[in-house]
Amino acid sequence: MNRIWLTAAVILLSPIAAETQDMPLAQILIDGEGWKRVDSPGTRPAVANKPSTTSPNRSTLFTWHPGERFIYAAQLRIDGGSTVRAPYAPLRLGIGEKETVVTSLTTDRDGRIYAATPIGVQVFDPTGRLCGVVQPAAPGPAEHLGFEGDQLTAWVGAVKYARKLRTFGVK
Image 1 (spheres, rainbow, N blue to C red):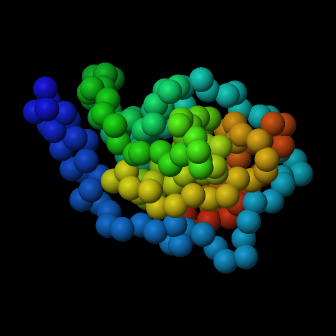
Image 2 (tube, one colour; image 1 turned 120 degrees about the vertical axis):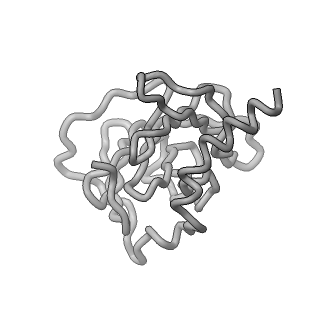
């Protein structure tokens, strides 16, 4: 059984680990920039019960399921299927918390994974290591994360917020 998990981890991590080294949060945050309310937000996206996103090259599916403490990864196959999902990115919990909730997932062009959680947006490098946590845009859960060019957007209730970063979303 351990051999299966080890094989899955090697398959999942090999192409991604080769593309990256240490990616601290400071690489993408801009001094003096913070969340700003968007005056003309457009239509709010639907909220997903089981948030998911893919890697920039669409080879890996990242998912979170209720009750889990990890973002899971599964390699996508050419036939449309996927490999067995494996724990990939450990989520940070709030002080005194025993579980967390992920309300949305997205990725940037460099392979970072962004997870909307109660403590803020947790950012993971392509190898699944935590880069850091971006403070929440506003009180309440961010129900949808996405990129619009170089801006990370978050919907909190009916209000949309944007934060400019030194990266872009996946096209």
